[in-house]
Length: 104
Image 1: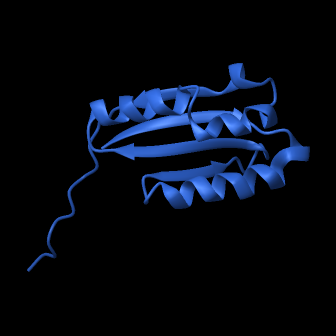
Image 2: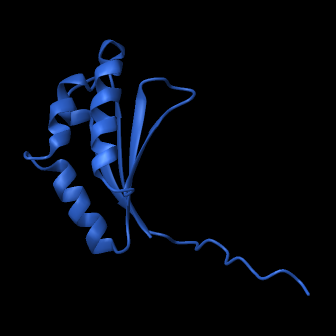
């Protein structure tokens, strides 16, 4: 599994609008997207987009960064504007351990 990761800080006065808007986009992502907020840094948000392949993650990244992305609506809510939206693709380097069957 690959991850497309986006990180940014939403200005506190736009937090409620951002949460309502991002909820709509998460619902339309069919389980491929989760949005988190920092517990130590309120208003710091990350998006985790899951993809089966590196190519699929790169497609997500390209779409997320494109001018036509629905996320562009939130750019004015980002502290520092669009330039402060950081998007990366991550690949697995240490696989999760397989669950073994119960000892018999």
